[in-house]
Image (cartoon, rainbow, N blue to C red; front, side):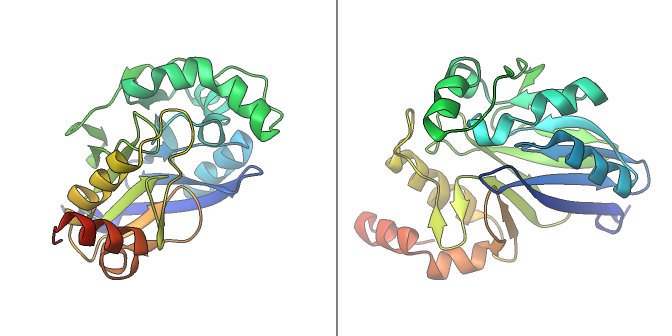
Length: 226
């Protein structure tokens, strides 16, 4: 089956922090995975309806408040399983309220606990639609990226942006871990891979290998080639 011909990927920008939420759906079966529902769950559900799909999984890249505010609304209305890496569980359960207050976000509803956990090498799969889990700690301890090999698309969360990287000055952040995740994991993917991040515009593995200044500096300091 030429799965790429049945794949739909749609994104929308939600919330005051302009977070990118992605819906990856199978045209034939009408099932989908929602990545990082950061806010405005009704807007996300409307997009799924327009795509003709039902969300079966909520797959989060990490548990920062700007990526989880829509989880409860999606979970309650669809019954979708909520997936997260276990290393971000404390951040999910205990960090969201302080983060919301610090960032000035009006968010009072506690997110649900995950219904399951994802880790390196796992696959999130519905009806043949498969997203491979890549652990990419650094932005948070439990940050992950999702790679759809059939479509050549990487959902990088807040680990890798166009010409930039995710912040590591929040609690649990680690610059060296993040650069290792980027250079030794994400940039090892095929160069033609399209990168769909948690904020801002899309990029590609090829572009980041050539033009990302954080990558260039890191590789020069560590004497590595990618």
